[in-house]
Length: 428
Image (spheres, rainbow, N blue to C red):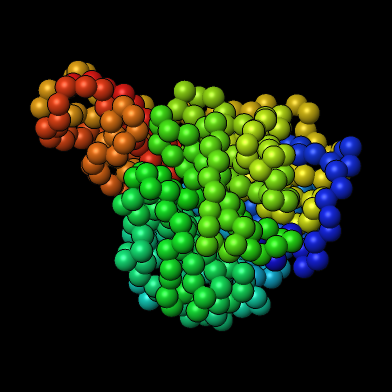
């Protein structure tokens, strides 16, 4: 089962009165203020959820009613961020991290071992997609470099495809079959979507948002019509993010603004009815689970939760989503009415002095191992300069100093790390 399809057969949507999203009453309800980055179901009942900074994998065999812990960063003996999870079948699966470790299981997740036969070492894997019986694709990373990995034999051997000619960063890969697929991320000019028809050998750019600093974060191909593609565009403050849609397999695109900046999750039942989610905001207000019934012209709060990174459809009446907790779309009354949403805690950032003069001095407190991309924007959200990309291997406070040969005015630094994006204003 791939992320793009609901089922091999797709039935017309019939909205039952009880068909709704609900937070599951599960023992893995997120109390550690870290969201679930990914979720994958191999059938209607068997699935896995990966918590990001908390770095744990959970498995359910009853459609999310109960979950069992399979692996944690403690059991692996390290400090990890679990970004994505994908299975070829009920036994063989893969787990991408942001910590130079790529994991595989051959027993349904009971045991995980590092993949050590990649032809080129990678810092992180941000996207995974299983297609067919034995083919798995991966991509990375949001903090660069851009690459794709591919195995056609269930992970026994791997290819590495350098994507730097097309992109500076890749965060999602999504295939219709072993040959036709899409990848998304960013280049110097904005968020991008790429397409291949030869299994990743060659790629063609088919979309660019045209605003530097934006990413196309997630992709979906509509189950009932593979020519219909949706994407989520993550922006930088003060710009809003966007939903993008193509009705002709990527030849033409339309974009609709979403009233939040860090847009990530995307999932549509039809060309007009769907949902989107994303990171919590810098000020601590959760990005709600948004719903549209008019193709993105208007959005309303679905009233179920937020901080959603992945929406995974099984059918027109069954779906799952990963965010502040695990959510289920079904007619089942199974839910957690006492679930309380928590918000992301932004990084503590100080700019001293502020106003700045000829130097921009930034102090950032990292509570855990992390990655950070520091970029400079003007007050209108226009990209000015890439300042720094760094791997944070030891938690603590890091100090940065940059020359600042810019005229007087208001500026913003944007910090993109493993748990979110945030902007901080300062003046000169």
